[in-house]
Image 1: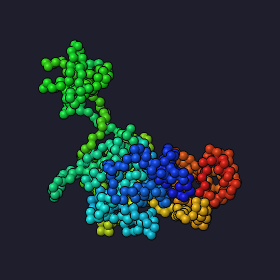
Image 2: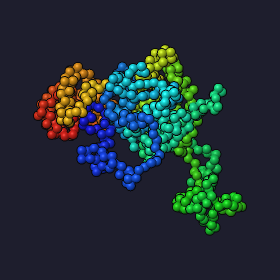
Image 3: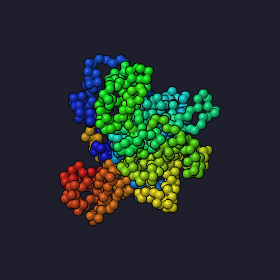
Image 4: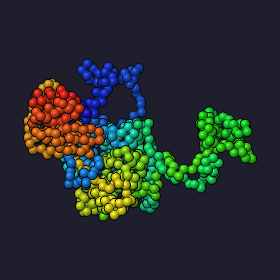
Length: 637
């Protein structure tokens, strides 16, 4: 992250980053004042300077604004809520974040960029009844991190009716900005799964192509969401939803599925190894199996008696081989080819050996008996919370399969769901970890959207959807804990305890994020105004602040994941200095308003240590010494 963003205590300015990288690669397309020159950019995209009159393009009203919103920095912060957390000391990186998801995603970029292995989201389907986020931020409204349900100002959350002239555009605006940020959170080998129905599946496909790249499309899975047709349906009874799958980089893909082959199909015994195998013809079958369709796959193979055999079909037409000549030769040398002579001549087969634990690519049709259905999901949630509190939960078995296809059990993989809803993703991750001893982690984000006053959820005490998310996860942990205490031998040692931390999206503790430069003044004048603004606005901050809230905000925006460990360092006597670690880095941090000479001397002789402190804790000499000896490892805010 650039230092100006850190100083302003905000998430990365992605527009500035993109321009900076573009200038590094192509300085000639910028003016002498450092501004991007549109004409020079046009010469790259259209060398012949020919006016383009037609091209394929996916456009809708509000697209440009949605993109601008995605790449503007967040000025919010994430505040730890100990009261709602469960076993926070045993959270192992599991997080539930209550807040508007676009702003939360921007804040997570500070520390989780390219660290998420799997994203699963079940966004509003845009049926005309679903909520959408209008992202309509204006100066005369409350800040969006103060949004608390659907009736407050800030992020407007409302129904998107078909009578609205921007019915599809509103939904696309909401999804576009969030997917743009989400892509940057994915690891290079990361995968994103998005649930959707027929209302927007065609638009979602084009949107995902634009954000992730058409070449990174993996599959559009059909999930059989019901086990019987609706007899009151008009026309067709809809039995399915879709799950669209994209990879971050086309060089990677999803995991293969384990399965047991049917041993009865392997009715031959190999003489050398004694293993069972079956024969598969290497002559290609199907509609495109003619010589005219694949002329390079029509050639002669030599039978054991020297006879030349061509891929001729039973009706005498010329077909083609399934293998190339090179593949045939390699398999022949590996003794995976078998020639059989019968009344019609020589036949050549591939030998496929029986494997008890085999792997296969996942199919694109998921049956309800394998991954669950909507009724199962509702009954599952009702059993946990004792009330029908959510209309459209997803079955845990469905999300478990998604997590199995996209993660490993021993790699610390992080699963993110930023439309968390009932919290099924957290349950799926914990169930898998309990089953295979894995160390996967979950991050769930849910808007604190009010439940309807007359709903069963509201009457049961769940005033917000995020309360359902948290309570379900809490009760699943309680159930796991009870089961593991009663039958400890059934579960891996690593899974004896579960927990999670709850964070809330809140206004930054630093008033500096609200500073707006005066466009009528020069850069130097604005810098001086900014320094004066900080001095006046933050004078009382450091005597009244909540230390842990400040620590969370500073550490997150300096790249520390929220599962960091912190301890008071005993090496310092005159200042309170903490040593902070996460899985990637380590830093010393001090929030005292005055830095003592002993502390400065320590870092003068420890140039390999990183150090963060308050700007106002330093005089000119101390600041110069720390900068001189620590270089970029020293940060003052």
